[in-house]
Amino acid sequence: MKNGNKIILGLILYGFLKEEGWVRLKKKQTLPIYD
Image (cartoon, rainbow, N blue to C red; front, top):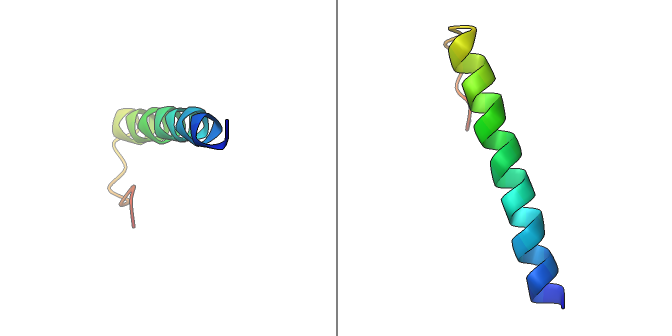
């Protein structure tokens, strides 16, 4: 179950980062997303 929870948590985190990246792109900010 631990491994499954890690995968689910990873997907949620990935989705959050992706959404954050899109928001920054839409705002045309030049700040690095993964720095």
